[in-house]
Length: 305
Picture 1 (cartoon, rainbow, N blue to C red):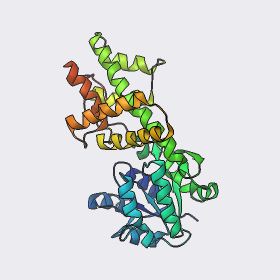
Picture 2 (cartoon, rainbow, N blue to C red):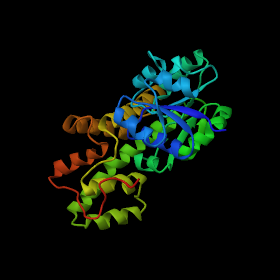
Picture 3 (tube, rainbow, N blue to C red):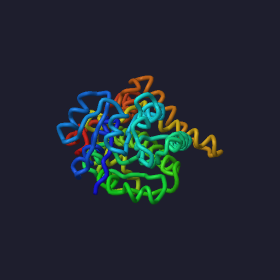
């Protein structure tokens, strides 16, 4: 018999994850501060709740996908939060990106109330989440993971159990750090191609077929070449994740010269375009500095869902 889940946080990513549960026959009760996001999921078969506590009480398990540890803590343990509705022995699956210290602290708060935690941040992009093809990075007890694996598989085609709580946070921070480094590098590479007189579309495809390729180039470079930059992920979120990486590096005595430089570039991007600007607009800094855009015909404004 399939588990039922409360789902809190129906943004660019969470809305697609909740929709995948519904498509796969799970009973889902949703809550979000945006009524339109709730209505969109209700139209797909979800039930709506007036707050996280009510959603959790109806279902007995909860999933969150939220923008920061502060918001996660409020939704979990604040007034009318999940812990006010979840019964003893329930499970909280946290799909937000957190630092290791943050998720371990939040899991301890949940454990004090008899609620077990799985961390399950995802990676691969909003377009893969829309198809249920995104990757899940899981941290927690293997038996607990086995209990909820059907739901995780319904949302995420490639789940990896990384180890105990905190393990998934480490690898998620690493993968995001690499993605932001690759994004800046891809922008610099495309500008070199542009200034070298190359056809940018041909250069894009040549890089894909080369040793210099990356997942970020294959996906986000398309949005740069289109000019939309619409990746569904903001400068603020990029800086949050880079901050996690730099804190881990400081705590562990690991020199991250390249990541620190990329974080500084993103600070410049936020100052120039705003924290709500798409993270892919970091390449616009290169375009503005060079006085040349990076446009080519035939590339999409958004990645295919």
